[in-house]
Image 1: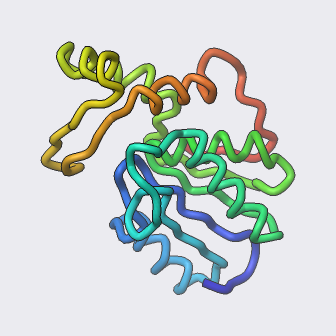
Image 2: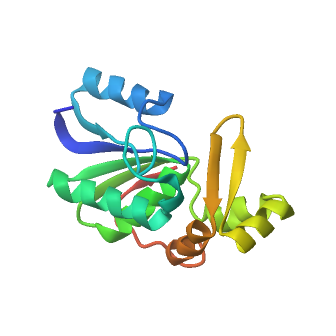
Length: 171
């Protein structure tokens, strides 16, 4: 949506897409208030291309940073859950471009701190043994969790150190 000021960018959560209620509410607000606004689907989410088994935090970060670079104007990232983690990573990568963050229940480091510890032991063992496991979740549908996703995510952990972002952050 064309509009004034920084571009508000919706950064969705794990297994969410740009047609979700929060993304559409921001779309409606942007139209009503005259904001510039972009919503997109992460790699392997919604209408985006990509094989789910190849999805990683680093790939989602890379895509968000590429979007910021393509806009060529300041952005305000609005990240929900995993999108909060991706938004923080993008803000660290592009501190001059990100002029604000709004984080809705941000789940930085969720693979290590929330997901892995709560998986049933047989699922964790399957991931370690076979490299992946099928997850059936009534809210998120069927999907695979991969060993690569968990291992790669360790490159992007944030909570053990200060997160140096000069922009205002609202959580």
